[in-house]
Image 1 (cartoon, helix red, strand yellow):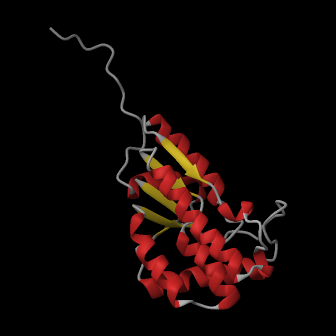
Image 2 (cartoon, one colour):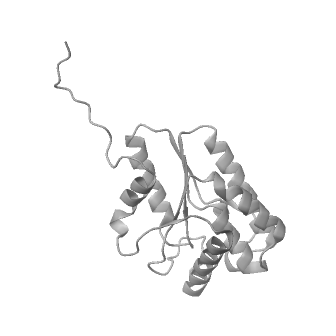
Image 3 (cartoon, helix red, strand yellow):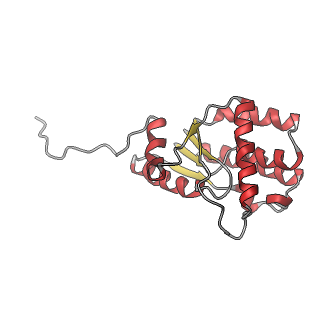
Length: 187
C-alpha cells in the first residue's frame, strides 16, 4: 500500500504523514514515510527553482518510493510526483516527457489525498512563505489532477481533526487495532 498526501507547501502534509504512520503501526503494519525530497535538493527550489532542480526532485521522489516500497507493507509519501510536477509546471510549463513520466507513475499510488490550504505557510527555513505562491501551486495541482484525470480523495477543510480517520476509511483500513479477547475460554 502506498498513500500520498498532495498539496501545496505549508498545508500540513508532514504532520498527517506522522499521524497516519502512528495509526498504521498500531495495526501492526511495517510503515515508512517518504519525506519531502525537495528539502535535500542541491539546486534552487521555491520561486527560484529551475528545470534541473525539479527534474532532480521528481526522479529522487520516484527512487525513494521504490526503495521504501521494497521494505515495507505501507509507504506514506509526504508529496507525490503529481504535486512535485506542479512546481516544475509553475516555473517552466508542462513538458511532454515529464507529462508521460507523471502519468505512468501516478497509478503506483494506492490512494492520493489532497490536503487543502487552510492558512499561509509559516517559515520553516526551507519552504517559501508567500501566500500567493502557495495558492498558485495549489491551483496548479488541481489543474494537473484534472488534466491527468487522477482519482483523488479531497480532505474536508472544515474537519482537520478527522483527516486521519477519513484516510483510514477511504483506504479500507480499521480505525482501531483489533482487540484480543483475553477472557474467552477455548476448550
